[in-house]
Length: 276
Image (cartoon, rainbow, N blue to C red; front, side, top):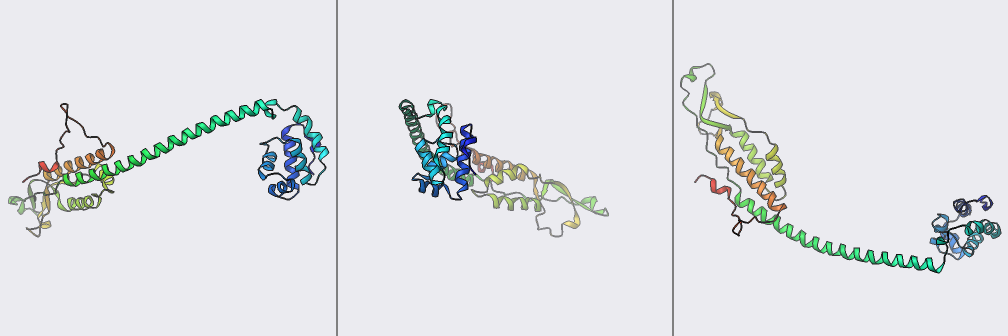
């Protein structure tokens, strides 16, 4: 049973009050209603957040069905030794009011600042969306065309007499199947949403295997394309990487570089370097 007599500190007294309320089997709201107090008042007292005044203590104890005298007797010496700053004098109350007023002013200023930031953020979001859209259309306009020359085979010559005759390309080449698979991947990723992935793919994808000869038995159809000229593919890759990197810069920067004499620096289109 809750007993205030053993309470020697405010914490012990609060613990006894908490036990008193708990032993009733009722909620703090029910006890508060019976005592004519608010639920917040009862919770504040039993949690130790607020120190009760004598009248409030008596109302709470009576609502719990106990005699108030032992509780007031235990409360009184503890209340007397509490620092005066924690007791309700007019000067301290005014200080608290002033402090709360300053806090309200600070919070109001903070809310206004956040509202301004939100408005600026919305404007920035719209500008960023426009910048990304413009950058994507620029990318499409500058994206190089994979118009690779077919790697031609030289005459087999003496090598045709070997057990496994080899055909020689007239210049270094890449296998067409590898290049075509790469182009299919590029087509999938060449979207506004996929361009960051395309940049990663270009940075991490393995290099094509250069070939200079091919077994004759692998060329059953003389009209089919089995290899692309290596220099054409390399030039395409360099231009494509440059386009993707320019797109990423345009999306994140949004600033047009200027020449020393004024005016925007013209960007060189990869298409300008293509063959006619």
